[in-house]
Length: 328
Length: 194
Image (tube, each protein chain N blue to C red):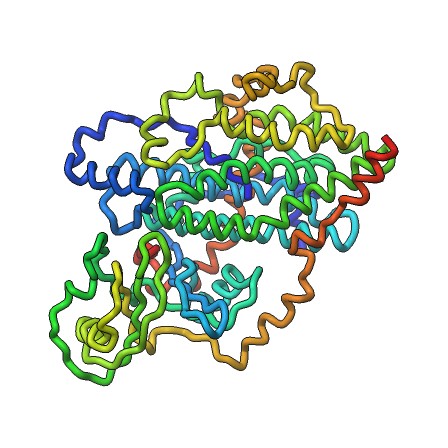
C-alpha cells in the first residue's frame, strides 16, 4: 500500500453549473445518507473527473512504488527477508491492478492511464522519485511509507465511491503483514550492530523530508477541498493525516533510539498538533514536476515494460481492441 | 543475456512512442466462493487475452492470500447488466412477465444490498436473458435486488473441484502473515538495556 491519495492538480470548480440540480441533489443526498455511489449511478462530471484522477494516481503509486523496494529483492539479507519482500512487492502490483480496474469503471481505460503516466501527464506519489540506496532505505519504505499510506487509505475506504472503497478494503486486508514486516526489519537494524544502526539512521535522515511531503502540501497552501470532502472523495485533510501519522509513529521511531532530523519536531500537548520545520515545499513541487533524482528512471522502467510487452499484445491481437468498461 | 538490472546496466533511452492503436487486453469479471456454504461473490476484474489466462490471473490476484473453494470467471462483454435501482424498487419488477421456456442455461447474479457486491442467485433454463430473469423471479418470489447480471452458463469458466489443490501450498506461505513478524522481545531487551 503506497498511495498518497493526494490530488495533485486542483479541480476547476466552475462546471457544476451545467449539472441538473435535481440529480445533483439526489446524488448529494445519497452520499449524505452514507450510501455508496456505483458506476451506473448518475454522478456530476467533476466527481467523476476527480475520482479518476485520484484512483489513477493511487494505482500509479503502487506500481512505481514497487520499484525502489523491488530493486532490493536480489540483495535482501537472507532467505526469509527475500521471500517476504517478493510477496510484498507482488501485493503492491496486485493493488495497482485492482485500482486501475476501479478507475476504469468511471470510463477511462487502463491503457490511457498508463499512457498518461508515461507522458508525465498523470502523477504518482512523490516519495518514489527518491532512490533506495541501502537495505535500510527499503526497510524505511516498508515500515513508514506503508504506515503513511495506511493512515490515508483507511480514511479513503470510508469514501463514497463503491468500487474504490471495495478495492481499498481488499488492499487493507492484504496489508497487515507489510507494516509488521517493515517494523520487524527496522527493529532488527536499529537494535543490531553499530554499522546496522548507522545505516538505519542514515536512511531516516534521507527519507524524513520526503516522508513529510508524503501527505501533500499544508492545507493553507491547497485550494479549498470543501466540495471534495462533502462528496466524500477526500476524507481527511493533508494536515490532519500528517498529524495522525506523527502521532502514531514518532514515538515508535524514537523508542528505537533513532533521531528524526528535525530539531523542533515536538507535539504541542495543548492543541494536539505537531510542530515541525518547513520540509521545503519548493523541493516537493520541483520533484513532482519532474526534477527529482529518480523521476526519469522510474518512467523509463514503465516505457521498457511497455516496449517489451508489445510483441505479446501484437501476437494476441484478435478482437482485443474493443474497449469495455468493467462492471463494478 | 544482457542484465535487466538497472544497477548493472543503467537504463538507456528507450525507443518508446505512444501507440497508434490501443492494445489493451479485455476485462473479465471474477467471482469467488470463500467456502462451500457461501455463495459465489463478485470480487473484481482481471485483464487477459483469453478465458484460461483470465482464470490464472484471477487465481493469483484474488485467491493468493486466502483460501477459497471456487473461482468463476467470465468476459465482461458477455454479461447482461440491468438497470440499477434503489430505495424499495425491486429490479425484478422492471421486467415483464414474458417467460419463454428454452434450453439455454443462464447464471444470474444479484446485488441485494447497495454498496456490496453481486452474489450468485441461481442457474435458470430459458429462451433468452429477459425470460431467465422473469423465471428466476417466479422461482424466488421473495428476492429483492437492486441490480441483476446475467451470463450464459457456457461462457463461464468454473474451477473444477479436482484442481482445488491449487491452494494446498498456502500453509507454507506463513511469511505473508503479520504473525510471522513478532519482534516484541527484541525490542523489550533493547529498551531494558537502554
